[in-house]
Image (tube, rainbow, N blue to C red; front, side):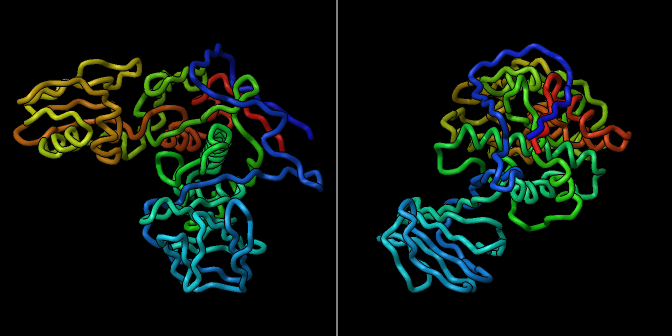
Length: 390
């Protein structure tokens, strides 16, 4: 197969505690010679007491890992799937197994708790009280379910294409580092937002189709092409957050394109009592909070750590942890100032997300300015290449 490379600029690279993989092709060829997209395993539900399952058309249910057929049929309609002391139960049928695979024939969708999925679904008995579900789906079909939840379908096509390539690259990286685990990615913002076939749109599907097989690499290796909503002026280096140093994720990219974002500025008032409870939950009991003070700043100008002064003691906590503990939808980034006023912490911030890699609202701004998706990717991942292996 022919491989073309689009250069995204030059730069030195240093890998620290970063596992990357190189290969002849991201997509193995099928019998016809056309690329066959790999299957990605997405954790779509966890800690559930039961599921309701529907299938329109033929299906087969197998035990795992033996692949023994337990049940076949021509359709299911809202049948309860529950966990029992012995194993798993679907309707009236109970099996002494801890894992099931539900496979539909052809392209028929499977509905689990009102969410429709392509591919197969694996049901896992986590314990006597809870279930998890993992969707095994072709990578390109998976991207159909990612894009409309990460960006707006009406955005310019060049912004959608940039997002498709970044999301494909991120998924492939996670597939390779997690191949020994039960799943590759979660369906939430901790990985990439994925909701099955819900809200699939023609334009976002088209962006996936028109970039099929195109991934970001550095020195021939796929890397985690992180992205976020709004950088608010400058991107973060991956090394500021994780034990990772790689040139395309080095941060420091000056971005003036995301000023159109409604998330460029934000405010939050968080009750001190809530912060005190969160700190206690994460084993940092300080008593009643008296002061919160920034201690350090990252190279991109975000808060690195905070000093919390309480009536019992004081402690220094990483701002990224504080954000996660309180909630990333409230503390939208670590680019903020904070003041304690009466019974609340008043936080004034900029941007949304960790700030590493592609700025989604910045990509929108660049696309509106007429820039191609290759240029957008060149801007946010300096030194990387786009490999076209379709």
